[in-house]
Image 1 (tube, rainbow, N blue to C red):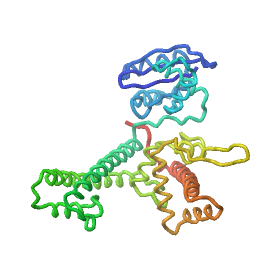
Image 2 (image 1 turned 90 degrees about the vertical axis):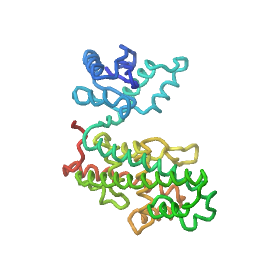
Image 3 (image 1 turned 45 degrees about the vertical axis):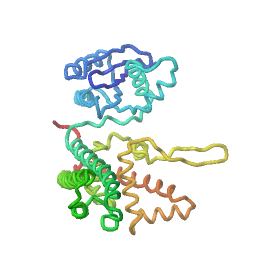
Length: 347
C-alpha cells in the first residue's frame, strides 16, 4: 500500500491506495501531534510502506518529521507541479483536498525517483533557517534601496555620481548628509528609509557572521570550491540536508534544475532550459558559475571550450552549471564519508 498527504495549516488530507492506484481510504487528520499519532496508526493498519507528502517543508513539516522518525515508512516529497499535472489529467474531478491526496498517492506510486523529505531538524535545518532569514533581509533591503533611489533622484538630482548604491554604510551616511537641512515631507521619509537601510545592512552582516560560524562547525568541503563562500555553502547544506536523498548525480541535477530538458523534434536535436527544480539551489550554482567564469579557473576553461564548440553564452553557462552540480554532489558525498555532513535529525 502507498499513501499521499495533502498538507494544510489545520488539517492533513490522507489517501491510501492499493497497487492498482485505487483509493482504499480517503480521510482527514488534524495537523497536530495527536493527528500525527492517528495518521501513523492508519498507515500502519494498512501496511503502507511509502508515503508522499506535498509541502513537507511547510505545513507538512511536523507530519514528515514524525513519520520519518518512526522508521516504518519511506517518506518522499511530491512537488506541487506534479500534483497539478496529475489532477488536470482527470477532467471533471475538480480540485479538493481529497482529490489532491489521491493524486499525490498515485504520483508516489508511479515516480520512484522522488527525493526523500528534507527534515526540518538538526544542523541542516538551522543552516537553512539562517540562510533563509538572511535572504529575506537582503530582499527587504533591495526593495527599500530601490524606492530610496527613486526618492533621492527627485530630491537630489545627480546624487548618483557620489552614491552609486545604498548597500554600504558609507554611502548611506553620505546620503543622510546630503539631505541634512531639507525639511520637506519626502526628505523626512527618505531619511527614515535610510535609517532602516542602515539597520538592515548591520543585521545582514550579523546574520552572515552567524552563518560563517555555523558552517565552520560543520567543516564542509564546499567552502573550498571556488565561488562558494559560507553563505552559499550554508544554503546548499540547508536545502539538501542529506545528499543520500538523491540516488545519483543525475537525480541531484534534476532536483536543482541544472539538468537540461530534451526538446528535440524531427531532425532537430536540442535541449532547453529547465525552469523546474529547487530554484534556491539553482541560484547558488548560477552565482558559482558566474564567479568562476570571471576568474582564471577550471570553470572558465570549461566555459570557453563550450563556446569554442559553437554553443551560445547562455548554453555554455548552463553546461557549466550542470558540471558544477556534479562537483557539489561529489563534495557532499565526500563530506558524508569523512563524517563532516551536518546532522539532519536531532531535536
